[in-house]
Image 1: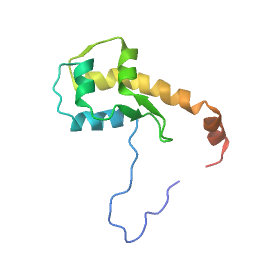
Image 2: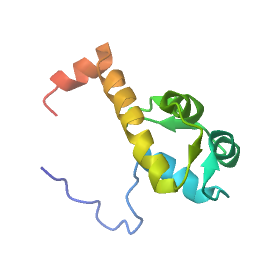
Image 3: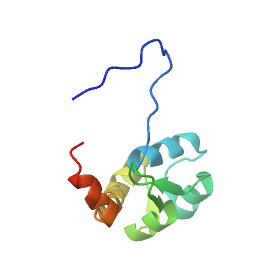
Length: 108
């Protein structure tokens, strides 16, 4: 199902980046070269509270990196690939709370 775009509005639609897309955007803005360690990544990223779902729940990047049990990443792609399951797990956990279950029962 799709909605018609607003008529006469030439601005791009608002989007919400969360999870790996938000991490990727922050890394693109950071002055960071790879290989990189956890501490180098955290110093390079200005805002480490990363949205993990469209509802605005966040996961701090330092906590996500700690869950990996690794300190060094050879490439940005490697970092994003290993972070993806961590953010996915937190997104799923946030959706199982009471509000998430209520949203799941709504027909839209």
